[in-house]
Length: 205
Ligand SMILES: C[S@@+](CC[C@H](N)C(=O)[O-])C[C@H]1O[C@@H](n2cnc3c(N)ncnc32)[C@H](O)[C@@H]1O
Image (cartoon, rainbow, N blue to C red; front, side, top):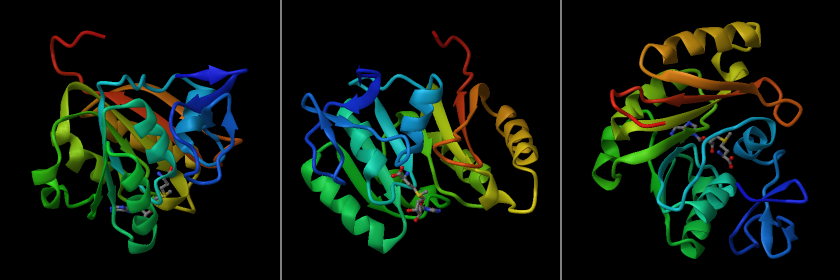
């Protein structure tokens, strides 16, 4: 990940959401993007140029645009019409973003348009976040990554966020290897980033 003076940036053309520019790079704001917060607070996953990403919960394309600055292709799934309009504008200027208006809990609807991916990134703020992730795992190549941004209050607003996280880790651990868990405060309160890897045999680290 590129940092200038310890500030996270991405190497694309600016003007997506009034982001600051620094030495010709786009500043990637951890208060606007949970993925940026993860890279600042923890390890996350490398985003090599060859990577294909399935992005669930694209919203208006803020984080999508930064991911697209790094990787080969981003399949960006969003079901709400209003943010989709902004996402289409991002895709107009970034040819490696494939915007798809669909419900992430119904992957069969977009399966014909999406290849096998190296990373599934999910930020949907829904009660059934694990279920949505699991339904999309067939898109993941062997040894691929899942980053799930868990909004604990969307799962159950009355429960202790730590308990919600513990249950989520147990559920995800049945199918995947959990490799990193990080609370995202002070940038995003009651949100945890969970990084998992497909544990198919024979995968090189
Ligand atoms: C917290 S916002 C995502 C912010 C975005 N990831 C970013 O960093 O710029 C959550 C988004 O997920 C979308 N969403 C929620 N459930 C969804 C679903 N089942 N299918 C597709 N999109 C969904 C919402 O419409 C909303 O735009």
